[in-house]
Image (cartoon, rainbow, N blue to C red; front, side, top):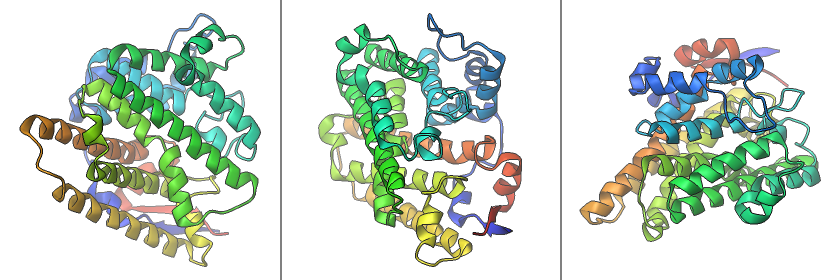
Length: 344
């Protein structure tokens, strides 16, 4: 039976009420990215009507216009290609996108095939020379991701390349941990759930790409400072809560994990809202406790913090624009902060 459930209060603080590309100063970039189908590879003809419709419907260009407002044209294209790879375009014949294959698709309970898929995906990062000579038999989505990696290598310093590489390794680790739990029919605790999802939700990958696109120069010493790492954790947790609160058909979402303790659906949503409000509090307290760096370093740190903020803003607002989460009810969910869910 469907019941009307309030979405957590905290999301209203981040929602952009005025919709439209011009609000982000990148209307032309967004329109061009929508028109251009992902990458033209020799054996791939992705410029077909179905692929174009999926790109338009999911509108990841709009997401990236918020996350990387100042990205130059070519770098912005790379970000859009990565987003289209992970979300709407890289689908198997049964219509499941790459990321969703591990959430509620054919790989969600198959850790062996999942690991094989991830090893293939990461081969160009781990062993680039070997991967370049062993391109036969690669899946389309792996080839697409290979082209994104090459562009990151060509257009960014080693430190940013390494951050993107580390982020993709974390992504694979988190996804495989999630698949392992599902294959054992194990529902994780909230702490376990957040730990796996921090790696697998993809925030650090987007953030590394924004650093590449915006030429953000934060040294390893500053990046590894406990305050910066805590801000990374908080931003990632906010996205986890936003994504999994909205996720439908995914057995391991935050509401399901909370309900295993006996909560009703509304109680679980309320508890998720409390987690979200704690994240907001920690965000401001952590910023206030950062060291006083030199003017040059502080300027780059502020650009980095702004990138964290825009990644969170992009995720939330794109969730209300795309049909991915709320479908046709997305405008009602945005305005009224309620969503219909099914009782068990």
